[in-house]
Image (cartoon, each protein chain N blue to C red):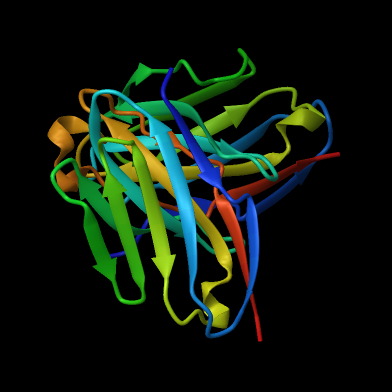
Length: 120
Length: 112
């Protein structure tokens, strides 16, 4: 089937505007992750969903960031009042089960192509 | 604190040559280690995965090794091709944790 898809692929916005990023995970994957990748940096964990609930939001950098997931499928990451430091690639990943669970192979995360956000 | 360190940060090699990328980790308790390849503008794609009992895993021209005692892993690329130019990311998962720890990656450039 189709892999993880994200939209838009690129987003340019002005400082202070709100943006919404969308992620469509692989069908049947219960776990969904959002990451941020800044230039030359490793992936920074933002939030994890199991089904529609988010057991771990510890990576969200500020209260301007929020995310939701509906129907155990599509997720949206919303950034309010964007700042220039929010410029990065936002990656979404999904897995059949939460990564690290008993070390089983089904914990592989499959990544989408990312959304490149530029805040002017 | 769980950490994954990769070296070198960047590497330039000629097409056809071999290279080895390194990954050191302090993740506990160890569950598994993956190497991902990330092409420019794309999401990471898994190359290999190794659990505690495995010390080598191959995927075509890619061979990963794991030394769980020294907490080190390497990714060896044989007979490099231009398409190998990418960032290679080492990712370690801890048992009981659903958030893996990512290294910053090694940027590999293969020149003709």
